[in-house]
Image (cartoon, rainbow, N blue to C red):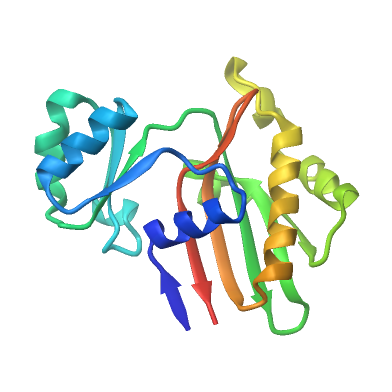
Length: 199
C-alpha cells in the first residue's frame, strides 16, 4: 500500500484532467515568497508531512503577503504546499474500494460540513451520467447549492463525478481517493485538497 502526499495526489489528478488549484512547493521561506507572489494572494500554506493537517495546525488559510513569513515559520516544516486561496461551495468527491462491491464513488457536502452533516450519496462503479445526476440530486441539504447567494454549478460537479469513473477505469489499484474540498462556484470547479491511497 502507498499513500500519496497532497502534492503527489494533486499532480496525479491534474494529469488525469481535473482542474487543480494553482499551487507550488516550497522547501524554504524565500521559495514560499516567490510562489505566493507568482500565484497571487491570499494563499493557503500546508505542511504536507502531516496526514491530518487541519487537526494538527498544519494549515494556514487566507494568508496575506505581510503575514507569510510568520505563518510559514509556524508550520515548522521544510515541505510546504502553497495554494491560491480557493472560493466557492465546498464538496467532497471520493473513491472507496469495498471488499464486497469493489470501487464505490462518493459525493457529498464537504469542507467544514463533512463531519457535521455527513450528507453523501454513493454509487457502485461503473456509473453513467444519469447516475452522477442522481448523486447530485440525492443529497439531503439541497439548499446548500444556492445558499447565501453563491451558486454552485451542478453540471461541473456532475462532470467531476464522471471523471472519477474514468479514473477508476485507468487505475484499478486505487484503494481510496478523497477530494475535499472541491471548490465550486458558477463558473469553476477546482480541487483544493486531495489524498490518494494505492494498493
